[in-house]
Image 1 (cartoon, rainbow, N blue to C red):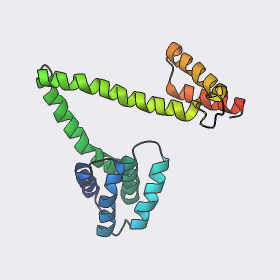
Image 2 (image 1 turned 135 degrees about the vertical axis):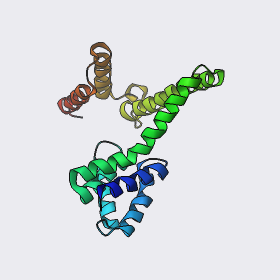
Image 3 (image 1 turned 90 degrees about the vertical axis):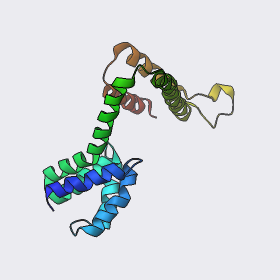
Image 4 (image 1 turned 30 degrees about the vertical axis):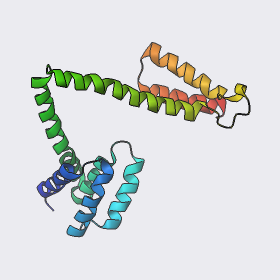
Length: 183
């Protein structure tokens, strides 16, 4: 398969696979049926690997399939093909927003979207707070919070707000604290 065909196949997938990485699966299975260098079993294996890697599942799968077909260049072009439609759409929307950003309706929409996004983040944060710090097996009010986890949370929260360091530092510090406190 030529690298151009590989790019175009993933461009097609990126155009029509709306809804994230898992939406690419039917297209990848179709590709496996179409080309002899890719099998459905390989797609399943790529999915398993993609879920364990950092980054978007769809992009990870595109890179793996592309690498299978065309080594590093194939991996790069497949991933680029998958994200190219999104880049085009985002560019068009960004350009359009420049011309209508002072429109009262657009201003009102963004006035509603910002607090909605903050609400979604707060809900996720409170859910994480409850999952990590709240002791669902508490028998009395003094056991409602997990003390060691609360200490790690408080210390890291203060450090993050004071020092503004890279998040990886705080993740590593949390892991070290968990080991030190025997969590």
